[in-house]
Length: 513
Image (tube, rainbow, N blue to C red; front, side, top):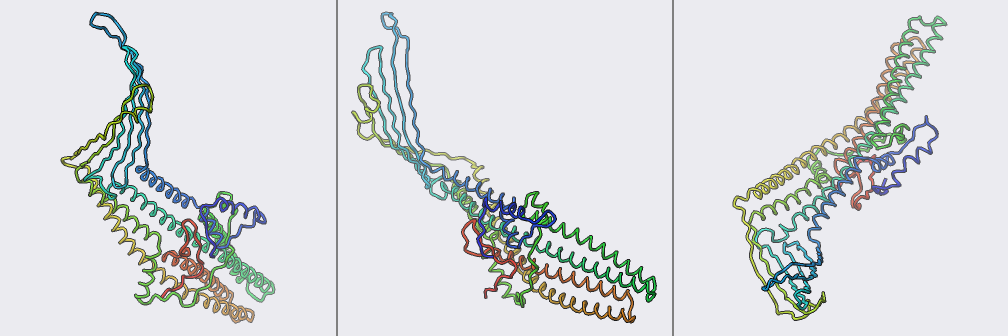
């Protein structure tokens, strides 16, 4: 199982309906291999779609933060018509009339080091018609620079929000990968539980068939007066008990199928189709894993800490919090801004809108100034710094706790695989012995050397042994998937983002010594 899983994919969402349409009939469940079931779950799980949306949301926040450093261009134009009544020294009334056209064009950008740049041009052209005066235009062109000298200076302050947003995106991607791994493990677990429930139903039906054959045989012998009638009652009670167990197993198998469909994220028509596993429970690997030495366990723990996406996300979450805490620390300083402006002014006669920019231009004009903003208590900034430092400490504690949790999880998973493998071997041996005992006891029953109750008891022992073997094999299969999840190897390494290659979830990961 090494083909890449590409998510999300519209084609992947259509896999299940196509399979259902190809099914033999409503009574025949749609069967999936483990690989198909996991891929279907990864393609349709609503929980994974939510995580993908969280990545998009954080990327949007990152773009918003980056937009703070975009160039912003402004342009404004106005036309003013002024008609003001006036009275001269002789008492004559007149109208002071004039028309003015003005426009402003400029652009501004804040750099990531906090410096603000902004060239601006202003032009105003006035035409006074009463009293009669020549039209003229004035212009002013300036290049302005604002430099923060304390608060807001440098990328650690001005660029902190963007850097933190980039870190949050990386955290979301790692959490998405961990969600994929968790979904794959959950699907494998549901898959093997469904397979075990089907196998258990086969055993129960076989037990019922054996009980029915025994009952029919005893009926013949009772009718022939070889056995007493009371033995027929015993065999009938045994048959009814086996029939009840079959019904309960059938219900358990159906519930396991529906649970598998729910874990795969199938729509209602998919759940109603009662999907079923087609792949049999795997056999145990020989003598794996060896977890008796602390050094071996430590090696596996280190491997998990290097590859577990949730642990990497916990560590990555410290980065944006550290950036924001540093920003709050820097911004405790007063705000002292240095402003520098340099440019020229122009003048022309006439109504040309562009002429003032180049005619009668003066030499360089300039302005330099300093602005101070100093909150006395600075309570807000101090509170912000305290909150961000606390969030940073929380992230550090979370990493430490995650390291301990993962270590315990890996050690338990290693031990479980080893114990489950031993249990499966013992269960298989028990089944073989119990089957041999039943065969011998049935021969003794035919010769009259034993009783029906003895045969029933041994058949019950065989049934219990077969069910225990199924549980052991299912437990081993789930333990293997859990070990892969614990060490972060549900997917093959070095896969590009949002395109993951599934590992073989039926085989334990190789021991990298």
